[in-house]
Length: 224
Image (cartoon, rainbow, N blue to C red; front, side, top):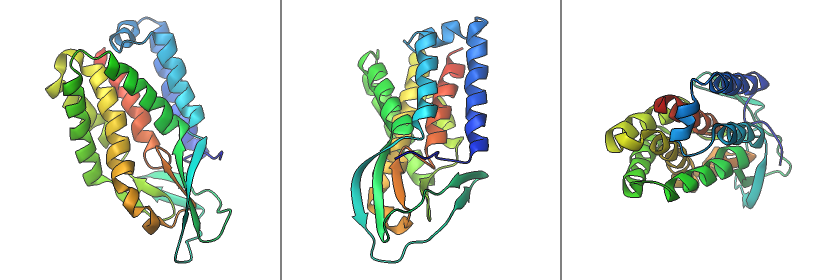
């Protein structure tokens, strides 16, 4: 399943942010920052770029039958971000999928950082805090899925990391922001997906990808 999680304007905005960050790395301003994340700068840049490309790839894992006639929407707006609703292939059916760029890749990076963490228990505690915050602010958007304001997850992750694990704040912010967002927004709301009447409910996709991606950017800025 291939479709962008938001309109093309926001897609290029994320690309601009990524290449701006890469330019700062090339000038040496963030070389130490990336090193603090435990990943070489070039590799982390490539992973963040893959997150953007992978945001258009969704892996179907389950088909869900809907009892009512679903809504037919083309564009949904939430907190100023406009998302394009994918076309429905079968009537009264929803596809539950996992987004590669918003769930699979960030989870792999988070597990790597967690495995090499100095204080993994503090990291997990930070994940729990962010998951609670995100779960409280997550809102179901008809035709789209569970969505969160894009700046809340990274800011919550940064503040939590600075308080709970200040000596290893950048990796903690990344892990807490990505896993906390996925758990709080998507996993804890799986029982509500039938209410959304969306063609596709993507874990880490539209509605949560922007928060997950910005968490990675903020984690690097936090480590500078």
